[in-house]
Amino acid sequence: MALIVHKYGGTSMGSTERIRNVAKRVAKWARAGHQMVVVPSAMSGETNRLLGLAKELAPARHTDAVLRELDMLAATGEQASSALLAIALQAEGLSSVSYAGWQVPIRTNSAYTKARIESIDDGRVRTDLAEGKVVIVTGFQGVDEAGNITTLGRGGSDTSAVAVAAAMKADECLIFTDVDGVYTTDPRVVPEARRLHTVSFEEMLEMASMGSKVLQIRSVEFAGKYKVKLRVLSSFTPWDIDINEEAGSGTLITFEEDEQMEQAVVSGIAFNRDEAKVSILGVPDKPGIAYNILGAVADANIEVDVIIQNISKDGKTDFSFTVHRNDYARTIDLLKGTVLPTLGTDILEGDTKICKVSIVGIGMRSHVGIASRMFRALSEEGINIQMISTSEIKTSVVIDEKYMELAVRALHKAFDLDQPAG
Ligand code: ADP
Ligand code: ASP
Ligand code: MG
Image (cartoon, rainbow, N blue to C red; front, side, top):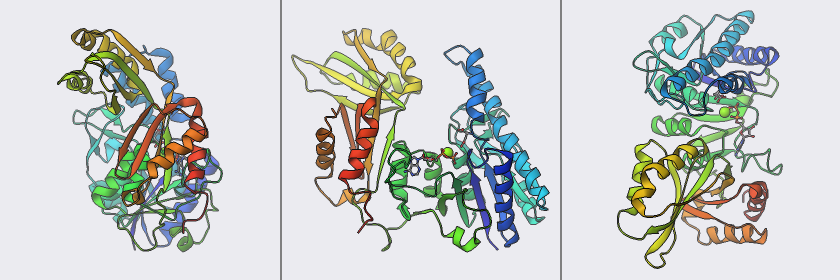
């Protein structure tokens, strides 16, 4: 008997019919003798619907008081789907109970809409499991020290599931979604994308952090930190598929480089449209300037991603960086209000129509010329690169948003990702 955590995403929970299917699948696992904890997302579209209602009423800039209410609101989506799943499981003849994050409790910090899990008390869940119940724990949410409901950021149910699996030392965490695994890139953008049988933890971390939303980045971080056995697989197979076949399907996230691992230099391509670029022109080229600008941005709790500084001319230089689009307006206000006056320039340019495309692969450590192959493929399509950033196992470029799909397809081809890895 193993302790297994299943997570079902929004599309998998998207209607009562689908919830019934999830219940039948979970029942199959429970009847095979496993202890089951299930973490559902809200029904597809529900989180957007709820946040859309708030948007109709709320001012553009959110105060902490509004952010608190957004979490109260958004958390109801998972509460509803969890209760529905518990009801469906009971209809299947299983004993089942659902808990909201605060009831477990899943403790988080107080950063509303992007809270981090700090600890999970698994006592209640263990007692229920020992009594033979299937336990449903709402995804995406927790509770802070003062008892306020918090949410973990979009896509956060993945993180809830992996964190629960880590806290309970589960034998495996299965992320059921609407694709049958992790692909070389988003199969909705490149139909030739191939499913990876395994992907290394480091590659998955880079792919998630570069925008591949199949797993939320924090879920991958948790899996790495606590060595959670993690698999991404489809919830759209027939629910009565053989359990052993199901257990070996999809994509396994691996922690060691094993023999079987696919040997491609570049394993995947990720992209995101979530960032915006800010450029300050004509800043003095002298010590302390980067700190002056980025220190103020960091103090405002705004995360900066790609940074470039141009070569200087006549003692002046241009300084550009990217932030999340949600933080763009705040960044501009901050720079205009407190930073530019200290720099002796008022030339500020912004661009929200950018995207970032990244190639990821642990093979990049041992191969040279990978970045230049990337740049050649982009130049052959006439795509101008605005910014570049690299790490040991990835190269990212910032380009005009309108070329995103073209760039992803061209790179997928240039790195032979549509061909089985040799
Ligand atoms: P869920 O609701 O199950 O959490 P998401 O929509 O959050 O599902 O994530 C699954 C989606 O991620 C897929 O439908 C796919 O379009 C997208 N995706 C992006 N990159 C990849 C990738 N490399 N492999 C598989 N899916 C990807
Ligand atoms: N329901 C939340 C969202 O839509 C969390 C999740 O689906 O993982 O972002
Ligand atoms: Mg998701």
